[in-house]
Image (cartoon, rainbow, N blue to C red; front, side, top):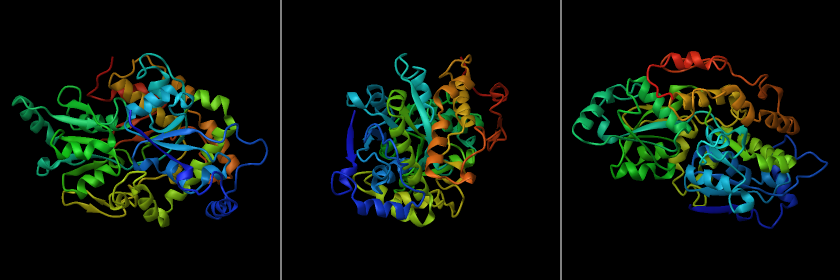
Length: 429
């Protein structure tokens, strides 16, 4: 496992926040500092992140001194080599030289809590916030540029069949089995009549390695978050067939998850961490901050890429790389608006349902009970109250209601079975 560490001390001079830093932070974020009274049980935590734009709230919370502002100045934001490495370090835990929490694919805390991806040994995790909506993409190799593939994947069916008949492998990459990118890719292929379990080979590739792998011809398509789709286009290696927001507008994506062990031992510190991340999400969502955000993410200590590979899609300006250019699409990554930070339980129910659809979880899984076990939206609401978040930014309930996908399918969180019954291609066990 490769892991590099960036601590707050890399960015703020001195071991603790200075008065000037706190004054500046309060000027940037007028909603107030951490509530007075009993302070956090610990002054830090180890949080993992993958080099993806949706890790921005963690990075900005560190860069802008917000962890310090809320009483946890020693939070570390630690780069992980892959989602597998993130899982393994969460299994270890911060006390054993691993991590306490992470920027993570929303299904992973469930798969870990159930023991599905941890060798049958459950590692209890909680989701305490969503980190973003939208802004992932499905990219296809340049060799398919004239195939007419886009939101509709069906033009690839005959091409893939022909390649397989000729003894050629069709490799389609995602980032973690049962994770969000796996599910977006499977949904897109299946909607076009392509069975992802039999007509392609689904392979796992860490997000930062996607572009390099497509460049050397080891894959035909991939699904990943930004900035890697935009970088692919900028380097002329492939094109974006569709963004995930076109599959499901306003869809949930990454989450902030912590080990239950950490939350139970440090409830005040947990709230402090979350408050810092929520303020960072507000900052990252402001249009006037997008250019600075792109510059920060491009730094060597974070993504080590040109800011131009980040900036466009942060604003919703998309060069698809196949002659299609769209501006002000509304498909920009959302960190705060549209309740982006709040972890709707109904959204988690969809991720579990899709994991059942593809055989990662048994059909007997009690979806509602499992969501209630892992989704701690109550912690989010507590942090929102302490932060003085406006009532309009706090959802009234835990469900966003039925969701409609680009192909007309409807997921009603109150009836996941009806949704599963409506799907022609699946691999349930």
